Image 1 (cartoon, rainbow, N blue to C red):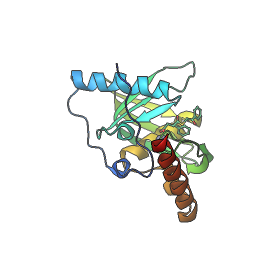
Image 2 (image 1 turned 90 degrees about the vertical axis):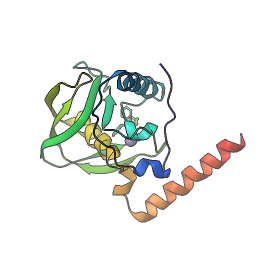
Image 3 (image 1 turned 30 degrees about the vertical axis):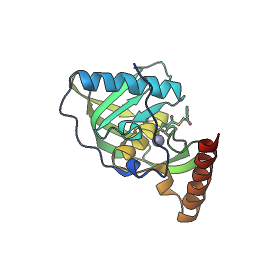
Length: 169
Ligand code: K1U
Ligand code: ZN
């Protein structure tokens, strides 16, 4: 297994729209394992392939709950959504920034597992927030896009400054 580089906002590669997975072979299996290793190393609860510069519709998740962990979603589609919910979100691609985002409260997702088998699952609470956040990544969208242009600009400047500092160290 290998640790992957997580792209940071405002890297333009985070704006890439992912294409569907069609090949469930060894390369995809390796990519899934590497994404889990990277997500655990970065202390995240989810990771979308876009964040590690792999532009296919793949998400890994581990909500650290009792039920069905870890989770893999390939070619996910929201088949039902209801309610409104607002909660603080974080993102491994926007480190150190947390902000409230409005999401659906409950969603139903249809996706494929690592073998290509189709399944459908209902999600609420953190699971619902996380899957909507990760599916946004696959569309090239970030949680900071829901904030005002001024807030987004401030975050951009803060992260660019941190990146400049890091490259000097
Ligand atoms: O997409 C990502 O960068 C992963 C992201 C998922 C996420 C967390 C919380 C709300 C929405 C989406 C993270 O894992 S950020 C890490 C984090 O802040 C966190 C970890 C455990 C519980 C809650 C947040
Ligand atoms: Zn994120």
